[in-house]
Image (cartoon, rainbow, N blue to C red; front, side, top):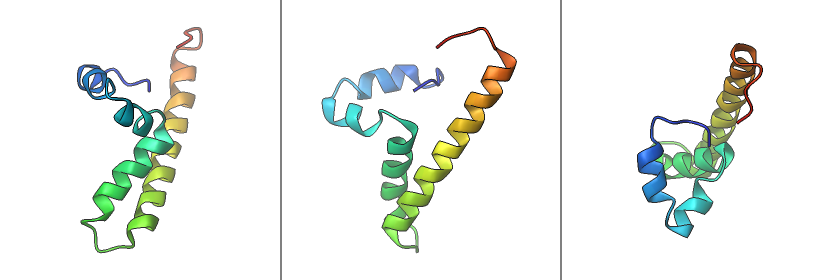
Length: 76
C-alpha cells in the first residue's frame, strides 16, 4: 500500500498475519471492505464486495497515473 495517512494504524493492524493477508493490495482491501459493508447494505453482499474491489482498484490505478505525472522521477 502506498498511502501514508494511516501508516500508524496499518502498521499496528498488519502485525497480525491474518490482517496482513487481507490488506496486502487494493483489490483485497476493496473486496473485504465491501464484504463487511455489504452485510449492512440492502444489496447482494458478494456483488457489493466485487463492485467495491473494482472501484478501489480503479481509484488505485488513477492515483498511480496521476502520481507518475506529478512525480515522474520518484520510485516507491
